[in-house]
Each structure stands twice: as C-alpha cells, then as structure tokens.
Length: 209
Image 1 (cartoon, rainbow, N blue to C red):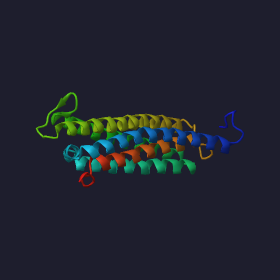
Image 2: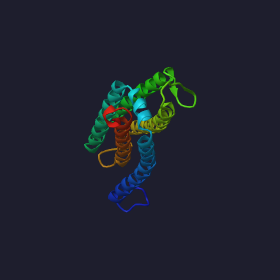
Image 3: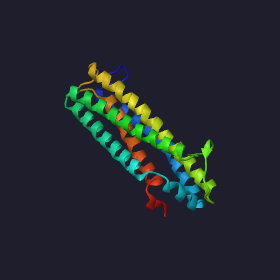
Image 4: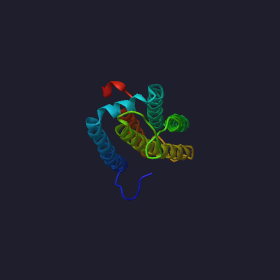
C-alpha cells in the first residue's frame, strides 16, 4: 500500500492527515467569513433577523441535528472497525453513514419546500408585511446560501463515503491501511460541526433575543 514517494507507512499516513487538515482550514476560512458577515448584518438589523429566525422549524432543525450526530457516531465506528480489521462491518457502517446523510438532505429540502410555499425565497418569491421585511429577506439570503453550501458539502461527503464503502468491499483497505477512511472521517465530522453552528444561529430563538 506504500506509495513510491513515501519512505514509510507512517510518513504516508501523516502526509495524508496533514493534507486533509490544511483543506479543512480553508473550509474554516470560507464558513468563517460567512458567519462573520451574518453576525455583522444581524447586529445592525436585529429585529428583522429575529423575525426570520422565528419562521424556522425548531423541530425539523433539531431532528436534523440528531441525525448528523448519529452519522458522526456511525462514521467513528466505521473507522474503529477498520482499525480492528473488521472490514465487513466497516462496509456496512459506511453505507449506514451515507444513508443517514441522505435522510438529513431529505429533511433539509423538505424545509426548503416549506419556505417556498410560505413565500420566503429571497429574490424569487419573498413576501412579508413586516416593517422589517428587507432585513428579514437578508436573513433568508444568509440562510439559503449557508445551509445550501452545507448541503453541497454533505452531498460531496455522501458520494465519497459510498465510494470508499465500495472500495472497502473490494478489499482496498485493511487494518494496516485505512488512511483514506480516516481522511473522509475528518471531513464528515467537520461538516457535522458546521451544521451545529448553523443550527445555533438560524434556529435557536434564545440566541436572537
């Protein structure tokens, strides 16, 4: 499994891990900029942002948070099983992780459809009689951009998890070599953590008072 550019398996594993952390650092900067912009706009347009937050479904948001936490557990168990050499279990846990990710997306797009029916899609079909309607529309701009970007990352993650599940079934990994699984695990956990922050700023009403 050792690639020719590496001297030892440990060097290969460390390089792959560092590479993933560097990539995640760029993702932190991307989402960090969006979170910062949201905070600034909310500071100047608090009433409108509060009204937008009041429209969020705390029930669906909470369910999706629980769903992603569960997916983090199955991903962690998949990597643990790989370390033990239990590749059949690893395969099924990876598929379970991908399936749970699909459940998350299904719920998220159900929310999007509900917002559409409520005429809360900025720039396309937004209606509100509130005196703070412009600020409320800006809240929805942030909501759709940030949660949409997160959903895109989830879609990429689900695709990669399925690919690695198939590679696991094909015998590409064992207890001595499962570095790619660790890398995709880091990515998956990062996406889950981002959702926790999105849930906090868009759904939890206590943070908007």
